[in-house]
Length: 156
Image (tube, rainbow, N blue to C red; front, side, top):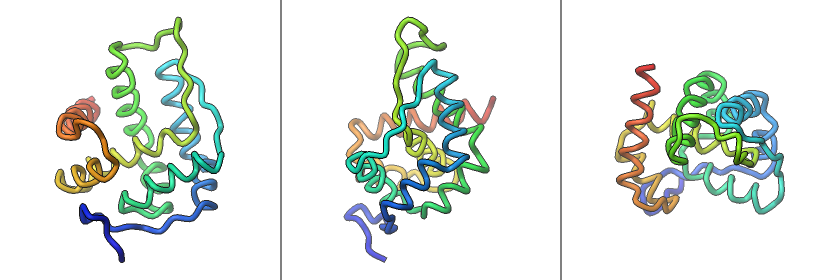
């Protein structure tokens, strides 16, 4: 299997698989839960550009679409709590702000599911390689925050 410069195994993902994932019951349920928790609406988006961005993200996470679907189905409640905590804390609040509703694009839950999977089953080095590949700014700080949020969610 080919690898990225960071050593991440590239998993081939085709456009049809991404569109199927966007329509997957467990992902839709996850995203609706997160959106309700943060006072947001989910906008359906299957444009070629958006699907291409999701495809690039999935190809370097080291999971197949089927593995990601299974991870979401088995862990959606914990992923939803993690995403909710991340979204609310990053906005500087602890509850949804009804004055300024948010709009989230369908598929946004994929990133949170990937983060959760890395935090649950992979090494910190693999997480850092993934964040580096995705060009996440201040990735060391972001990784520490991810680990802190994940720990808080696990502890209840």
